Every structure is written in structure tokens, then in C-alpha cells.
Image 1 (cartoon, one colour):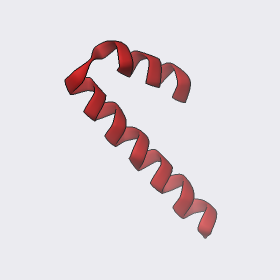
Image 2: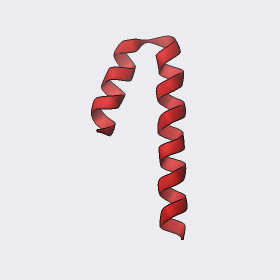
Image 3: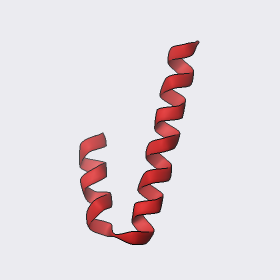
Image 4: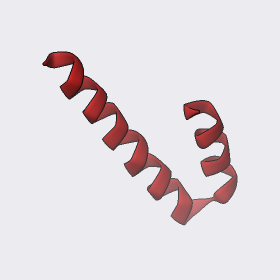
Length: 37
């Protein structure tokens, strides 16, 4: 159960960070996406 919650939280954080960076810079988003994938 803890593992699922951890993964869910991590995914949520990544999405928030990506969306936040999208409003700031597209370069950072590209780097983040590459790292995530």
C-alpha cells in the first residue's frame, strides 16, 4: 500500500513540476520529460 501511495505522490509531483515549468520555460520541461522517461 505504501508503495502505491509513494508512486502516486511522485507522479503527482512530477506533473505539477512539469506544468509549472511549462509556464516558465519549455527548455526545462523538455529536460524534465527526458529525465522522467
